[in-house]
Structure formats: C-alpha cells, structure tokens
Image 1: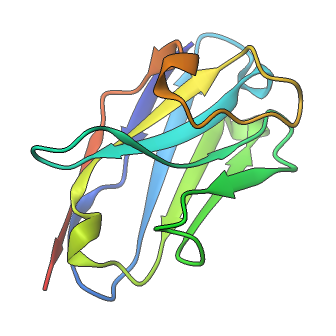
Image 2: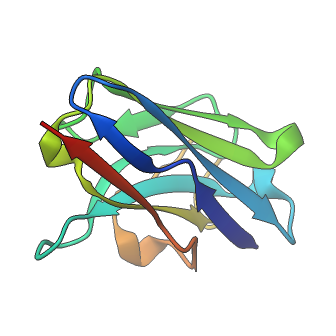
Length: 126
C-alpha cells in the first residue's frame, strides 16, 4: 500500500488543522494506521493510531483531548484532526500502515509499520 499525507501548513497557536493520509494500492481496511511526528533534533514519536475497523483509537498523553483520528475506508483515507495547536506540535507528521494487527489492535512502535507516507510539515507560530 502507498500512503500520501497532506494537510500540513503554518498556523497560529490555538488554531486547527486536519491532516489526511490517503492510501492506494491495497485494501486499506486491512491496515491499522498510526500517526507519528518528528521535530528537528528529536526522535520520531507516536501521536496516535486507529484500528483496522476504525472502532478503536489511542493517543499519546501529550496530545490526548486535542488530536482525533478517524478513518473512511470507503475513501481509503485516515484523518488526523488537530485542535488547540501549540508551538511544540511543530513537526513533520507521518502516517504509517500496519497489516499485522488484530482488528482492534494499534501499535505505538514505529517498527511495527511497514508502509510510510512522505510526511507533511506542521508549523505552529506563537
């Protein structure tokens, strides 16, 4: 499966963005999807994920209550809604797909994901 992340941009603190991760090539409903981010000079970190079915999602503590992941398998797309943006959210955001989970499984480990999008830059100004 090939992934294409989009929707990043420059926003002021307190603003919102919706990132999209569009998939092509395989049946997307067979993949759990994770969102990761990497800020300059920092390790890539898991921000959240959604199960194959879309019935379950989980989030890193640092983003809970502000980030929401959803998916539309009919459109082969997963979304990351980011609200109340903070300057520390500035990073390149990546989506990744994992087809080894159970229907409700989500892995926070980057190594679990075999397919990665190219990343989309989110910059939050204070």
